[in-house]
Image (cartoon, rainbow, N blue to C red; front, side, top):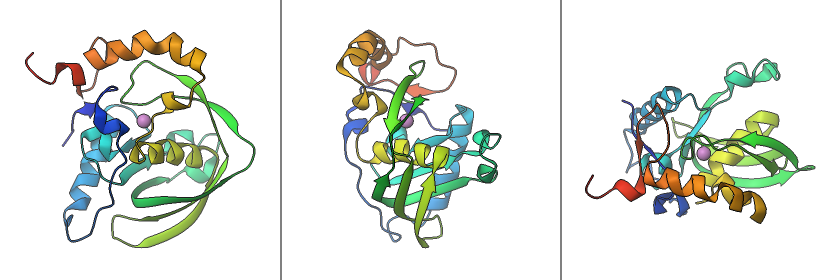
Length: 190
Ligand code: NI
């Protein structure tokens, strides 16, 4: 089932998400399936639970669109539960990022190229893994979501000022988008 994506401006996107327990979420697979369906419906490569209105430490990633440049990403489709970033290393590099909660805004974001992260998969198996390149980049972006951070938080004050109006418009629903969204300024009434 496709779910509406929460737009920029909603406080849930600024909130640090909480860990989930297997007992609380016996149907986590269904939720993960819905998140993938929602993400594919919006042509995204990652989606975090706060973006569908759930303040939970869960995100999904599908990096396969980047497998032309990085063949090892051929089957890179994963769910991350209760992720904890252990280490980020290397020289920061820029990539033009976007976010399904912030349609039509793309900006260069600097991040370190190598990460080490601990997480549980959809079968509640624990992993501690190292990722690099685009996989690391997408995971860092989604990990930021469960920490209550958006890529726009990482921009220079000047870049932020330049996109301020666009961000305000998005929170009011003044944006052309072809997937279902929930806009904070439209929550009541309308
Ligand atoms: Ni995002």
